[in-house]
Image (tube, rainbow, N blue to C red; front, side):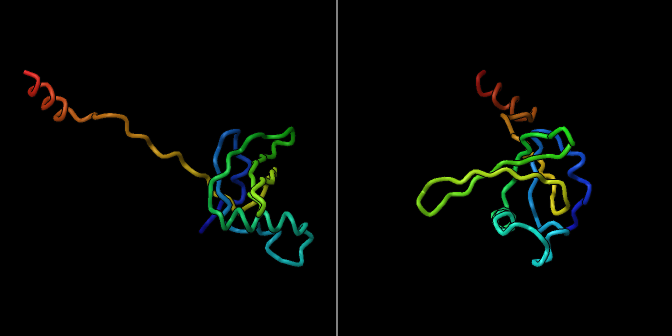
Length: 113
């Protein structure tokens, strides 16, 4: 899947993104990334759920929050700065509310008469 390496620069609060692959700078296992952070990325990629940007800091870097359930049932809370590639923007689904077809409304009014 093709990702935009500079997408993170356009993100705003409440935008939703999905991690689709390990960021290029961290794809090498010998690269200096903390093992817990690497595990978090791997879990988020495998989970395949959207993450909501909850803040953009003063350096214009977007942050997301997420949680993992531990084996004992408790939750572990995390925040992650996402200033790299491997992201795709998630679009909201359109919500259908009621009947907007004119033919259906004519049928309903003819039944009442």
